[in-house]
Length: 557
Image 1 (cartoon, rainbow, N blue to C red):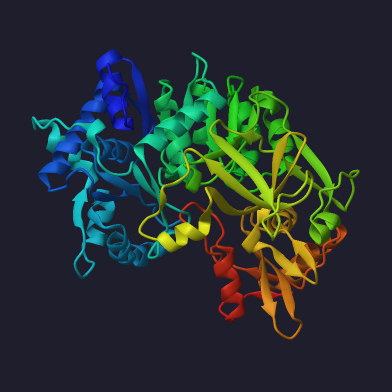
Image 2 (image 1 turned 90 degrees about the vertical axis):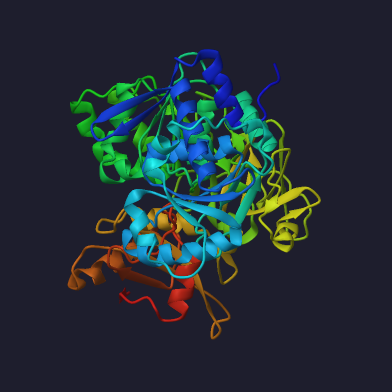
């Protein structure tokens, strides 16, 4: 029998080989709904039949905006079963942005040549008010029932087009679509599985949104590819009640879950409650963490706080990846102590050299994110594209058999990003102790008086000051023509009254100064001010532009 060529082909093969085996559980309200492999395939087949009846054909683009996790998964596999090409969108991080976001969908659809836009029932009415021509609007919630009675049988392994057009973070009206082929996605899943073999007792939990590469590939497809059960919560479950994530990890003796550092930080306040509730996290073997800068102090604090629940520090699994490489670039060793490097921050900022140093105010700790996974290479280069020696900062370049086919219909952008087979990631880092260390984004560095200030470090320090909203701090540079350099701004959201904000701004400055960092301005703003992507990441470029244009107001200290 020929091996499946596509993910939907693999799903059909699983349904035929051991259809009764548990594939996925979905959290719906307070209950969990189980689905076997045969049930999952039948739902995908039914969705494919319903889409086909609506005029969608193999190779057509299908945009998805379906926040609820069960209809989202069934729609996704249905699109794949039909041989169409999904592009998954996220609901704006702040629902206040939803109206304008829905208005932008038509231009997004036009750029992606989408034949259909599949929406949740909740959003469909809001979208239908949009004017102008556009894709066919289809409600996701009814697709399975619509297609059940149909005799239509799709042929997923005959899919003609790409597997997915993955939208990069922050993409809305001007999306950058990463084109990934079926062959490359299947090879990438195999490469990840070789780097992180799954034991027979493996169990996954994920609440990450499917429009994010870590949520799609890591949260859903990794357990799917390796044939162990996935327990899927919606991102809204986590946002409204973060404790539900920890409860699921304990209830199902889950061994693997992926999340950004901000999610682990949110859960810190829940440690006592978890201990009192008797949660057992001892089965957790792979606490994958990535997508944002990873603080060694966060890993230590989380491990200490949740040790009474059985959590092991060596379960942390810091990773590096990006959508253009399908998802993963580097993995560490499973259940090995996290590699932490302590370097002289001033030398890193001024000279780009990662020189080891003793603990103190001038020290900077960085978390190692491991080595390249199979079929992937990494090299670091200077401004002249020359390789840099170990412990020297350079731009991270990646060459991989599973590199994207390109940005959708943007050949010039693709050519500037991929040169001679190497992807220019725009990320900065260095190699040491057999591991890669990421230091920041090349375009987001604050260049102040010859120093390269790393935004994530300033943000982490400022977030530690009492009165600052956790995860709601941005550090950006704003060009000053008068000084011919960038001014360093730290923006922090706070709930404090205006009369108390001057003191808070002073404490932020002093805390940064105690670590040898001098900034130009602290700007305190109300909660909800800082713009974020649909994944919750800060839009630093937009923040910098808003400051320069005088569009951000608050208490300037």
